[in-house]
Image: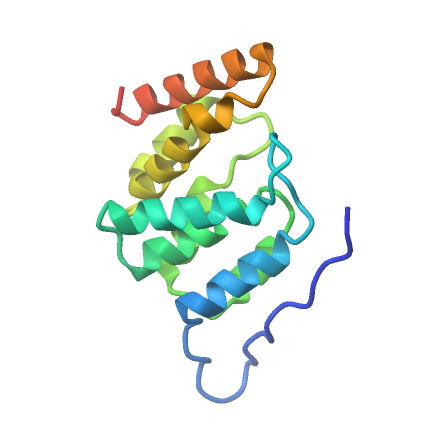
Length: 164
C-alpha cells in the first residue's frame, strides 16, 4: 500500500470551528487518499469516486451527499481513518452518510442495508454507487466468476434497499 498522502489540516480545539470543506476540497482529499489505488478492473479508483459523485448530482443530490459520495469508501478502504472523519470540517450529515456506507467486518448485508435506509441521504449515494459498480461495461472486463458474483451481490443489495 502506498504511503498516506498529506491530509488537510484538522480543526483545532481553540477558536471558531473551521469552515466546512468545499466540494473541490473534498474531491482533492478523496483523490489524494485513494492515490495509487485501483478498482477490480485495474482502473484508477478516483474514476469510481467521480462517477458516484456525478451519479448523486444527476439524481438530484445536494452538496452534502456529493461530498459523501467522494468519501464513501475512504474509511472502509482505510484511505482515511475514522478519526480523520470525526474531526474533519464536514457537516454531521455528510459524516453520517459516509459512516452508513462504511461496511463493517462480518456485517450481514441486511444490517448494512438497514443502516443505509435509516440514515437520511445515504440511500441516494448508495444507489449511485451500485449503479456504477453494476455498469455492464465496467463488469465486462472482469472474469466470468467475478462478474457473476458481483452481479448477484449488487442485485441483492438493490433488493434490500427497495430498488429491486
